[in-house]
Image 1 (cartoon, rainbow, N blue to C red):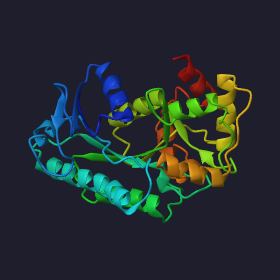
Image 2 (image 1 turned 45 degrees about the horizontal axis):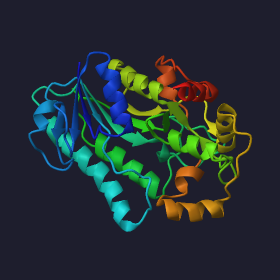
Image 3 (image 1 turned 90 degrees about the vertical axis):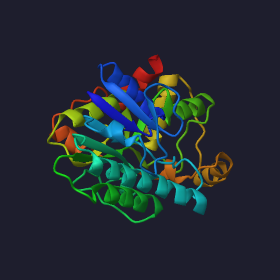
Image 4 (image 1 turned 60 degrees about the vertical axis):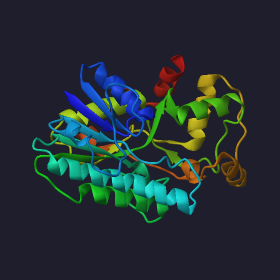
Length: 299
């Protein structure tokens, strides 16, 4: 199997690369800073020699996009938008020029596309999509991706929730603040956290690649979202930390200035359910958060 991962040098890309290489796949990474034999240079905006790598590949996975873990000033907002739209657009141009097109194209998306919800469980069919900066980015991104249809290329938008792993993402930060005694609830603590273990994330990507029935938006999340308060309780229990200071909203607003981030990342309620994965027979290794945390902390 030949797999191309665009923007594959981050936490998710590196995890997928390792996962598929263990299954004897040929994996090539499109990156601005190639360092290894299987790294291929691209600028994520313009066509180049890299487009020949996509020819006849089994799967194209696009994870390109500036991290949203930043302040939403005008410069960062523009870069968050253009990094997602431009990379999707230029990959479409490359796919259009392939004589043998990729069998499946998986494009990163986000579970943030759904509105803040503490009670409504959002599936791909019933999810409520709202209207603010983050949700509009997600909508524009998916619109660009699905704009051009090609019968030979199956397209899947990966509406991914918080991915828990030891090598990046939110989990190392959660572990650190819990150990420091700061692992109380954030804000009211009732906001839902949709999560998925990194092993299930990689397994779900493989499942989608191999399952020709799956197309369109797919929620990449475990089936049991928890409240922020419960998440922090479980972190404290697993790490055997007896207490955790709560962080009210005003404190988070001040801290977010110093940490150069936005409180939305902690306070938005992402209440998301993997309807399509479940319907198509996907089995999670970790559907329960306690088991997921335990497995991560053993490693």
